[in-house]
Image (cartoon, rainbow, N blue to C red):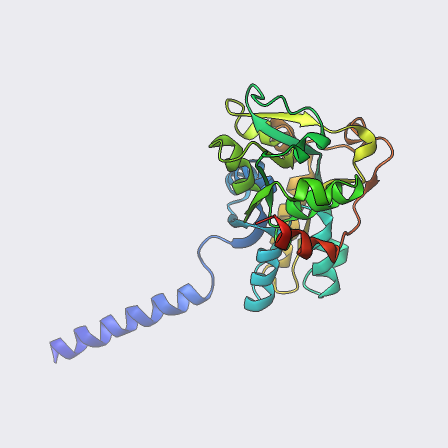
Length: 288
């Protein structure tokens, strides 16, 4: 009998622990799918937010398009934070994100990123069409930066000529920056913050103001699948608070429209761009 009592007691303890786990006695958690264009400040912001609130934010980084597909297929995730408004527009059209929840976190300026010292003397967008130059971009079908790259070349009538020099389509913004850090290519079309990610190895060349059709920004919103909408909204409020914005500024991100417009006063902000039909033909003729 004593043995039976011990067994019953152990079963009782196990049941109590199981019930306790179901009641959510542990820390609150959130899952955010984040375009890697904002990786450094988002990692720091999540850490500071946890210290302040006890809420753990798990971050999944990658290309904005790939992440959106993951959310759609898994029907999970509390927050979607792509690297540009293009993918937030897609998320809203698919009813994956609550439009009323969307916040603007920071602005991004497209640039040409080259190895420190600019060894090939690249000074303009037209230089990307030089014969023999090797250029990298983000995958325009899954990475917001890649989409902006094609749009900029197309807008400036350089898509055919510079497109022949595109040898790599990186799977994320982070991988695009790494191409320059490792000197795997001669130049990439990137974001201005790349120089702050790796100041020892990356230098940027700003484009002429009239060459930029749009200013990019990082939006953030609560998904329709969020398990804890209140906590998700709390994290978004932290990101746009003075403390949250200071974290973005620390990493070199622009947080006001006024400062963003210094680089291109007349460009549109936000919007959406669709890959042109001729892009596929250019890939066949020379791009990889």
